[in-house]
Image (cartoon, rainbow, N blue to C red; front, side, top):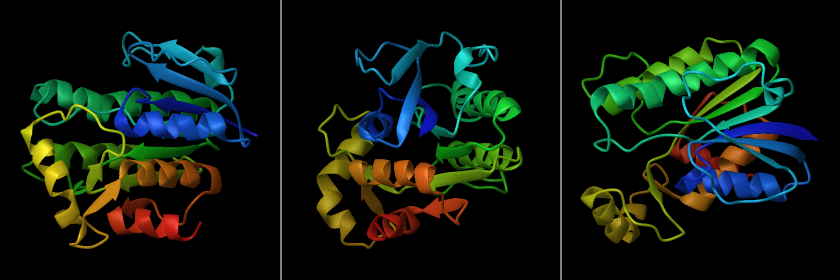
Length: 220
């Protein structure tokens, strides 16, 4: 039986990972760190409202025993300014990871990253540079296992209000994009299942590109 910490549970992918955790007999306890209440009630779920992810209480009971971290919190490019994007994408997960690692170096850390993440950190694109930066920082901490998921276009199985015009176009063109092959797109439910499974069962890959994520699902 495993205990997990999860972030981003009000988002497209994090909400699905949470659902898998709630329904899994292998998970005994879930701490969900949220910025606003989700309204979900479950005997296994401890929902903690975090006002500032830069100031986590490392003495909190939920940090004492952690087997898996599912980090699914993020923001879309263009929805916040450059500094805030860096804080949410790099600083928040690093602060959480360090807090977990100090007491649970045996834990597995699963990060929802993105296609094009640049671990040289030389990219001119904010998204690629910051995603690569956090991958580097988390990989260097020394967790028993660290896995970064780099999906392509994530098709939202559950209809939602798209964050911008670009995503509305991608959703409309999804049937065509999918024809380009397993390296281009993935359904939100498939991505969540792969992230969940990797946390539970492990994986021999640290970086999982879109086609690697799909390959994991085919092995189930």
